[in-house]
Image (cartoon, rainbow, N blue to C red; front, side, top):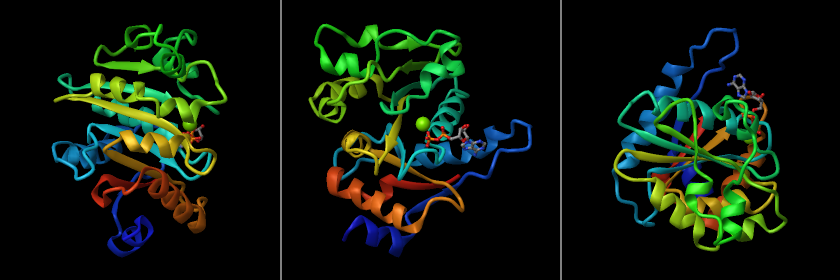
Length: 231
Ligand SMILES: Nc1ncnc2c1ncn2[C@@H]1O[C@H](COP(=O)(O)OP(=O)(O)O)[C@@H](O)[C@H]1O
Ligand SMILES: [Mg+2]
């Protein structure tokens, strides 16, 4: 059964994220629901053997809310002081972390691609602290042409294995599936995937094409591991 068929037939697990416009920050409760969706699956063994504590946030195209979801979800996981979260910026074409409040004004330093490219860069030199002591972040790093290839060289696997565990989660803010191979390659290392759909914007054909691309490159994707987030 293809991912597309199971998406249509079973409806997959749809998690709704209402719009957060209007000025007040009412995001906590909305993202709690999204978080619990992922927590519910975090302890389950997957047929694929992929780690369900590694959560990939992607979408078909740019601007659909991937970073918005990734950053809010990270903050929501951090509400539990016993949880530890590592937010990884893996959108190399359009990184979001360096300009975010997580970085407290510092945008520089080594990031994921630097680590993947060189054994001289270890995990400790890319994991950065934030204002919350249970949240760590990893920047995208210096842009490289061969970013999708670097993702598959084995070092990412070691990184996410080291950053995930009992109460430790990795949230990956990935690129758009339809823009290059990077996001779909990342899906090989994530036990859960949030596929963000921009309400009234994302076309049905882009959704089906995006899911089919994930399935082709990272598949087969366990249907329970995929959540559609309507943003
Ligand atoms: N639910 C939302 N409410 C308010 N603003 C949002 C929401 N989702 C996305 N945005 C804003 O829309 C823009 C694009 O979203 P972003 O998360 O950067 O998209 P992507 O990472 O998929 O390219 C950003 O300025 C973001 O803050
Ligand atoms: Mg983004």
